[in-house]
Image (cartoon, rainbow over all chains, first blue to last red):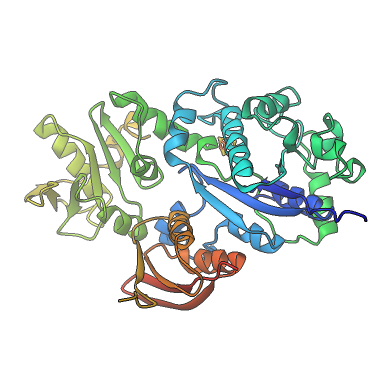
Length: 351
Length: 80
Ligand code: SF4
C-alpha cells in the first residue's frame, strides 16, 4: 500500500518586509505548511514611535509582521528576546555594520532561536527571505554560510529567493522542495522581488527589512552611543532604549542629559516616567515636559536645563517663564528663568 | 467554585506594541478553549494588532471598548 506522504512543515523568519513574505509564498506553493516566527528585540521601529507621537496618528498603526502573516494565512509566533538580545548587541563577534547594527550576529541569533523552536515544535526546516548580496553585512555570499553554520541551521536553512545560488539544502535533496521552483535572486536590485510580488498579487507591502530596525538608523545610533559613552556600563533596560526614540536629547554634561518632549503624544508618554526621573515642566505657559537623565551638579546646570525647557515652551519669547522641578519622590520646587535664545543652544549639546 | 468566564485579566497598560500582543499570546497559551480573557492596554496599536493576532490564531474577539485612553479587548479562546 502506498504510504501517505506527511505534509512537511517549515518555520519562516518574518520581519514584516516583502522578502520574507515572498519566501513564504514560494514555499507554500510547494505544498508545505508554514508558520511564522518574529523576534522582538526592543529595537523594532514600528509600534513605539507611532504609538507615542500624535503626529503619526494618521499612519496605520499596525504591526507589519502580523499583517504579513494574515495576508499569507499563516500563524505567527512573536517571541520576546529583549533580554537575550542584549549580549548580541553588546558583544557582537562579527562587529557592527554602518551604525550600531550587529546584523551578522543578529541574523545568526535569530536563526539559532528558530532552530530551537523547530525542534520543540517538530517542524522540518527553516526559511528566511534573505537574498545573496542584498545587504552589505549579513546577506553577502561569504556570510550566508556563516549564518547557516553558526546558528546550527546548517542545511535545514532554506533561502527560497536565492536557493539556486546556494548549495542544495536537505529539503531540496530529500525532494520535499523542488529546487527548480525556487529562485536565483542576487544583488542589491529589488526588481526581481517586485516582479514576483506582482505575480503573487501582493500590491501592498512594507519597505525592505533594515528600514524597520532602529539599530541601522544613524540618529538613533548616535543617541545609543552617547548613552553608552556616558554611563559606567553599556548594560541597558528596555525603558532606556525606548527613551532614545522620543524627545529632543541634550547632553549638557557627562553626568547630565535632558530629554524634552516634542509634542503632546510624547509628553503624555513621558509623564509615565515621572517616578523614575526628575522632571521639569513649565507652569506659566504651555510647553513640553522634560525628563532629567542624571543629576545637576550645580545651580548653573539646573538653570541651563530650565532655560532650555523654557525655550521649547510657548513662552519662548516671554521675558520670563516659570517652571516646576519635580523630584522622584513627588516634591516640587518653583523657578523662574529667561528662556534660552536660539543662538545660545550649543551644537555639542544636541544628540 | 469554578472561575467565571471573564475572570482572566491582563494588564498591558503602558506597554508598547508588540509587547501587549506578546503578553496576550503568552497568557492565552495557558488558557483553555472557551475561556475568556480581557486585555487592558493603552497603545492604540493594540486595536489593530490584538484582533489581527486573534484572527491568525483562530481566537474570537468578543468586544473592543475604549475609555479614558484605555483599550479593553475581550477574547474568547479557541485552541482548535
Ligand atoms: S537590521 Fe536590525 S534586525 Fe535586521 S539583522 Fe540587522 S540588527 Fe538584526
